[in-house]
Length: 242
Image (cartoon, rainbow, N blue to C red; front, side, top):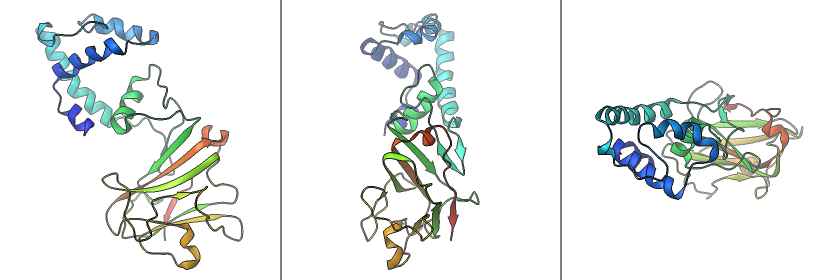
C-alpha cells in the first residue's frame, strides 16, 4: 500500500518525484520560506531534480533525512487525547505551513475533511488504559443531552486491528444517529454496547458488534459538528468494560 511504498523508497526516487510533482502542483506563496531553503541544496520548484548531480555531501544528508523524517512522522502525536479518544479540530484539511501535521495525516489517512464539515475521534483503549479486546464487553454512556453534537448526524464504527470493518451476524457495521433508532434510558441518557454477542433483545438496537477476539478500535464521526464539538466544550465520554 502507499505508506509501504514510500517507506521503502530511496531518497533519490522520493526527491526526484517530489520535484516532478511540484511542476504540476507549484508551492503556495506561504511556502516560499521553505522553498528558499530547499533551493540552496538544489531542490527547485519547476525544475526536475537529478539526484546524482547533487554534491555528495548533500546526497548523504538527504539519504539520512528521508530515514529520519519517516521516524519523526511515526513518533509524532499532534492529536490531543481526551479520555483516551484522539480528537483534533485544528489544521485538519487546511494545514497552512504546519508541515508535520500535513505529513502525519498524509501517512495515516491520505487526506482529511475540514473540521467544520466533519470531526473524527478514535480510541483504542478503555477507561483503564487497556486496549480493547473482542473477548470483553464494553459500554459508552452518554449523559442526557450529551450525545455527539451534530447538526447533521453522528456515527460509531468498529475497525479491527487491520483497519477493516468487522463482519457480524446482524450485518451492522455502524450506529448512525439518522439511520438507527437507538433506545434511550428513562433518564434520557444513552448507552452503546460494544460486544460480540447481543446485549439482549431489549437493547439490541444499541449494539455495535465487535470481533470475537483480538484488538479493535472505535471511531466516532460527527458530521457538520456544532460549535461545542469544535471548541472543546463537549467532552467525549470514557469507554468502560462491563
